[in-house]
Length: 204
Image 1 (cartoon, rainbow, N blue to C red):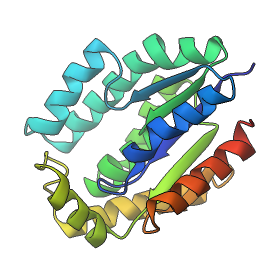
Image 2: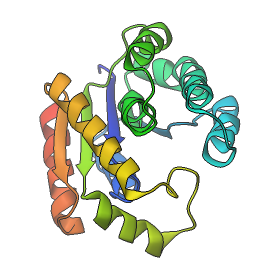
Image 3: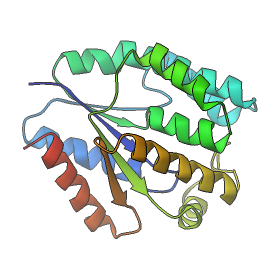
């Protein structure tokens, strides 16, 4: 079988991480081999960089470079080998998040991000991106009720409005691979829409 690369995207609190394991279980149930991973993270090196990115103060360029460094190791050690084996890779965030968070949220140079994306990924892009879209104010309420905030989750509403605008821009630029999921709906309806998208892009 051909490997498929599927990413789960959305602002913190939108619920994307809640749906990735049920999606993996469903795909395994129809006979697909599945790798579930996340960004930043997925390898020993990338997970150590994740801790720094989430909890250590730094400027926007440093943050951006660390994110891409983690991604390069992640692709080489986890994502590319799994795809070569014909697996379905489900990844909690990928480069769309970098453009949304660092590019739009942190106002980093989008041309720089374009160059880093090309150098690090060498053409690798998701086959399907599920974007869990939620009003940033509602997402903030969910986050506050769920956990202590990291560097990103502690940002103000204006930051997350910019991040959401970044996701809109990425979706408009790559509409062929994006499926917008209304994350304000109840959990069962969100799950139904995720399954519908997986059926269309992976089968089973």
